Figure 1 (cartoon, helix red, strand yellow):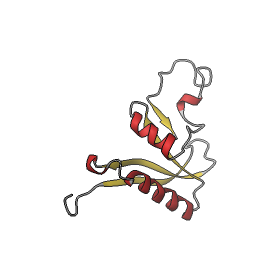
Figure 2 (spheres, one colour):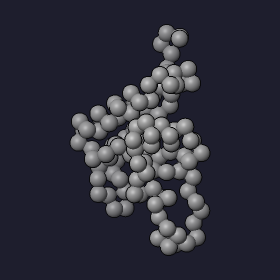
Figure 3 (cartoon, helix red, strand yellow):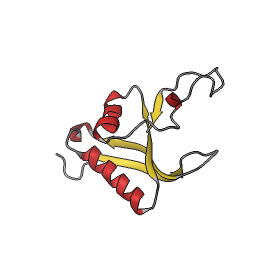
Length: 111
């Protein structure tokens, strides 16, 4: 590996779980990027552990993130390896009646 090469990063911010009706302070992970050279080495798991530690030390209630449904590798990572669940605020948790009937299927899940 190239010395000093960037292998991954995490982008996050402190936020609330719902802009309209906030009930919890959360650490929201906006993106995690891992270089293709570094995948499968535990770096993603380590970055998420750091996100969880920052959240805990900052007294955030939970860690949240958004994953595109088309990114099956990422969904599998978060759901299976990291043991995250689809959040109650994720679009897939709502029925047609709850969102007014005329909506397109969201292409993402909130975990």
